[in-house]
Image 1 (tube, rainbow, N blue to C red):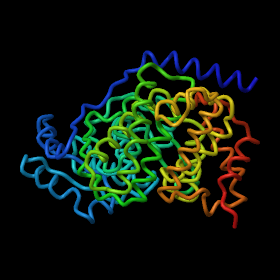
Image 2: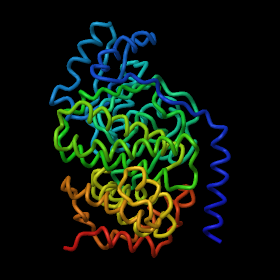
Image 3: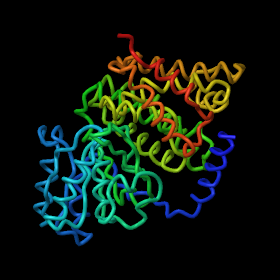
Length: 401
């Protein structure tokens, strides 16, 4: 009965999604495309923007030229760079206060998924000043139009520049959850590969597998459209063709640009088709132990795909065919196994660990509860997990102490 309830809910959400105001960000793409953003901001009659980023970005001076060009265009700005990995409600409220104090008219999210999530949270507070962030948890709690939101990703993984989600952490309860609303999709996105060439190899690896997780979870789910299928497939192909090169040779602009494209396409895919149990588990690890989201996904993905068993053999077989790692005569089960092994090999080649350190046994029951509450009934996963399933998976990914 519980599975029937979940599937019925998912079917209703899929039908309702047809009527939602979906849109995609307008893109600035290619080398030095960031240089076009100040003029674009000015053209929107914006006189002051809040830039949401993190200390890592400001310390290496990645925004310096952009800030000078904003000044040249006569656009004033204020920088909030206190965003932490797995951004918190405190981050959002601090940045929101700065937005109001400086009478900003737009928001620039500059960085990885954390600054983007924080910026989206600020936008939600601007749109809904009477609502707290916890009150906007879940689906369609914002609705109202956000101020112009410009996303500048400096990693190739989260796809946040294309998605309707902002993931937030509560520092007090260690809960990590998503706000999901089409109004959170950025209005503009800058895909400039030059912003990613100095990305350390370990971040290139984790964010790249994050993008792969988005594409795969969208593809194997039960709420795909023709567009999400196309985007997922293209993203998977680009990742297997370019991630290793981007990891080994970060100066390869073509590989970097292709990975940005893959992350964006995966974002398009999962914002319509959703993610799944990999993300539900990863969010709890981020909330409890601040495990970087991409790293958590990378470790968890092979375990969950194997646990799904027969329910994912056909779609994973299709992806194995797509990247050319299976024989035509292989049964779907064998092709699926080869695809999962290809993910494991990619992880191994980039020194991604096989387990998560620091998981406390006493925390698992609460993490199981939160993961199930996130996944069910919303995510249209291949197989509905119960408490026993989730407990088993946490123990699979937990490093021995």
